[in-house]
Length: 272
Figure 1 (spheres, rainbow, N blue to C red):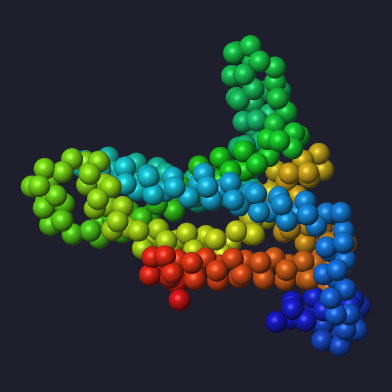
Figure 2: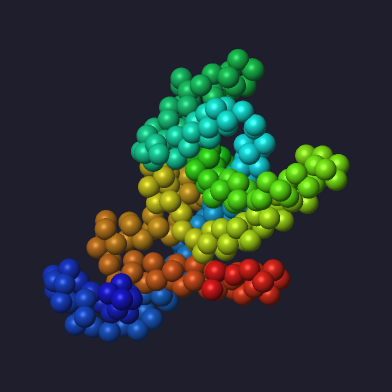
């Protein structure tokens, strides 16, 4: 609530905490300033595209991995595969970004060494805007697919063994078991997770973008969260940054609301 109030007044730090509630009311001034700036479209586009690509390419991977890992009948091997894929999720974002930076180093990074061996010139990946989105999406999918698969593994493990036996007796092969039993059984779970993911479509992991981007890649890497940080913390424009953050939250809520309504209409599955 404090952030919402701040977005509609002219707060100055000199007025202290009480100033949040007593500062001059300016209405929609900060929103008009944001949408009138040259950065608005770039920030909205970058924030949306980073999450959209992460959703399109990253969302199916935990589902496919969960199906694959539950088809491993050796229990020890199954646990080993699961645990080894959970580990990247618990690595600090700072460490992950350090690994990415080292791997993609134009001088001695392993990726450029391979490119050199194949006869290609080195690429300064982190200084080229066109490479930022693939790097962000691929590294994010690698870091989270194992952990995100837990809920899908649980959903698959909840399917009655009697249904598996019935399909095997009817002569169903693995593909038929997956398409006619497993996928329909986990469909409500997939839809719920998808709706919750859509609710964060305009939220990008601030730390990772902040650690990987630089002025040379602002064209594709600068997002609403990093802009809010620069305006609020570095430039002391608290009311302006609160207004931009509020706009971002409203968009997220609107998307999840309509996604929930659409899901209820099409599948009878919804969050509320």
